[in-house]
Length: 87
Image (tube, rainbow, N blue to C red; front, top):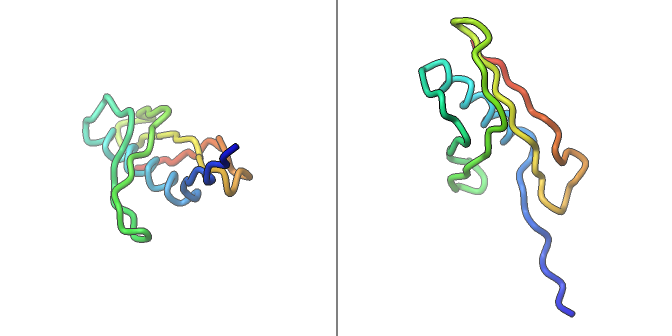
C-alpha cells in the first residue's frame, strides 16, 4: 500500500483576496465569474480560485464568496465561506 503525500491548499488570506478581486471585477462589468487568477508572493506562482457566488449589492458595492480549501494539512478552515464586500 502506498501513501500519497498530503494535498496542498491555501490559507484564508488567499481566499479573501480572491473574493475581493471577484467583487471588484463584478463592479467593473464582468458578470460570469466562476474563478479568478492572481499571483501569489510566496510561493511566486499564479493560482486560480473558484468563486462560489458574486452579486451586486448596489451600484457601488458587490459581494463575492469563495470556499476555503487549506488542503490536507490544515482542515480547521475547510469549506469556511469567505465573503468580501467591495465598494
